[in-house]
Image (cartoon, rainbow, N blue to C red; front, side):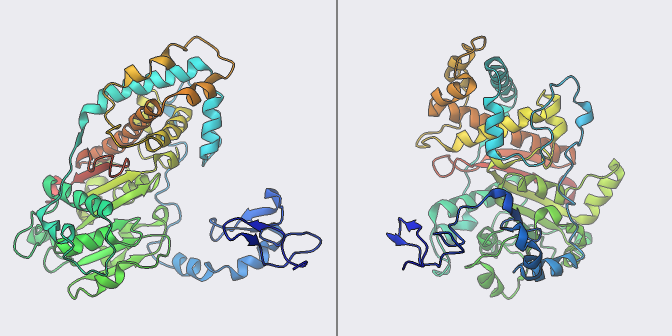
Length: 462
């Protein structure tokens, strides 16, 4: 044992069993190391390697073959949906020099430090700005909890018992489909529960005119599983960059009339128009809990901006996007570079630094007790009077002390306001591309505080 690692594992109540390295008392996993010695793997940045071992690691990284195979695919186009950091920033004049302007990806810690470095008056002005913007949009967001009859087989657990069943997820999935049905994108279930048929001249890619489904950030694919069980779909594309066990793929492939294709790729690099089997096929884009910038990447993937309006019309008419339903979440991960509608925020006086602060505030919305509906922020000004009173007072603790002394309810209210502002910008961007849109709260916050659903449809394509 004297050659074993001396790191204590509290959960296992024993020391690590690995061998020590060199003259250290710890193994390679637990030895004190300098962050400067470790660099992200260029092939897969989710893991790091010692800089001195990088060259050898590049030859044997487990994801090397996958990366090589992906780069040869016609639909792979590095960063096509990533956006630009300086997009539309030429209109932003007179703004103070941003403290995070040079950062492409600001972490939560960086965002928090930037907020804490504000003066109390600056912080108060930002809060007032958030309140003012939110008061102008809050009436455009409504509650819409829907469980369609077509989903009864899932609600009543009349599906394959081997499929995982968690009530909160089933309710969310059913409400997403129910809102699509109410919005006219899905036909109300009848008989064989088929989707609404396309016009005969728009069904060249599918003999029955039934739209395909592209699920972004599909994970295990159980939103599509419910859609397949409850509505008639013929072709499914699951877009996910990670590998998962216990996927819905096996069950989906057992449906004789359904064709499944899983695209293991980052949404940022997906050129959807180059997916050969989707060309000319009408499709519906869906996504449940698309974390942070994944929502922006997905919208850009489906509705890429064109140089002029005629090109945009041609793009949409040729690509057959029927509609979309995206449940947003994890707004604290959003980045200025990826955000889809910088112009909307800048016209409201939101700078790049303000955006970083607002995205950090959104994490407050999920920190509180959601036994009651905290997302109802109509009376928010009453909760934030303590902040406004300190507008001209420089406390010793500054903004950090103000934030730490705020009640959980106050922080949650600010967080929900910021989430709705971010999602409203997304809605406006989709609307500018000719779609009819709605932003709804599709489940109560007691089920999930991440309850925003952006739904849209191409009226001319239905």
